[in-house]
Image 1: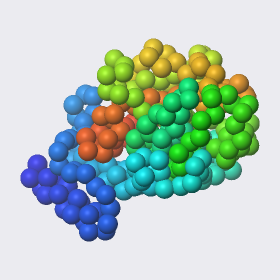
Image 2: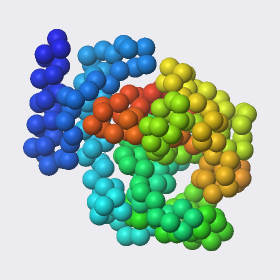
Image 3: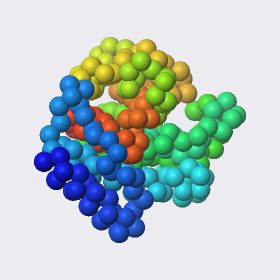
Image 4: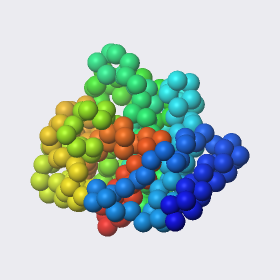
Length: 256
């Protein structure tokens, strides 16, 4: 069985490359749940997901991760008529912090796209380098901000970010912002459970700073949660990205 699975994964890689996709080697790891169990079908499905992440990442990785779009360009798919969930990746391309350039949170854009499609949720990502707005929301007049501010009152924002593997004790770090109880905490606890407990809540990243999307949208009356994912949980080369998306989908599917 192991040989059959390895052959199928290798074939997937060949087919993807033949289709012109940028794909990492799909046989260099095994996406496993925290309890160590994973079915053959899950392995194959998560390998397909890793290939899709790599392919969708091309527009974000273009121009040294400044993206294919013009400055401040976004990718927006509006499904708010059928779901309150809005999956956001504000740092999918290069951006700024305190006047200094910051590198993209790689793969958060394609993860947001795939997760939103599975859930039937809306998705908003940055596809062109984000201008320096000095962390003052009142100074922003870009498409990303306009879309956030036009969301229906019932919209729930899931704010995806990337962190280094060494940044937190767990591979997933969740910040509930100013709403450290109620719906935001319930969503955070659901995500933690979906990752088999391998997530921390309000420890390394709390999302309490006013410049965060989570805190800002909470200030406008929305429920919101910041989700920080370690590099090893996002990189399609590790294949864990399939597990990451599966776990997030499992935790959020009841909300749409």
